[in-house]
Picture: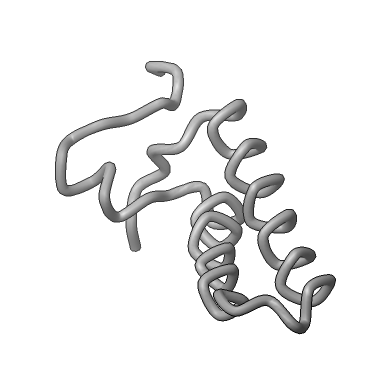
Amino acid sequence: MLAKNVGKIDRNMRIIVGIALLVAFFAFPDSGLRWLMLIGIIPLVTGLMGTCPIYSIFGISTCPTK
């Protein structure tokens, strides 16, 4: 299991952006690049899990130190 490395503000922003992109996916069915909005799944999942694999690779953490 991956360690938590996403702080509260970062986590909330990821969830908001992910939901916004997924809402746009369903709101604009005739858009030419509609499939690109599915990228919203990534920030939504990483925000809900509280961990980001890219942060782990680069050794970044936005969580407050314990």
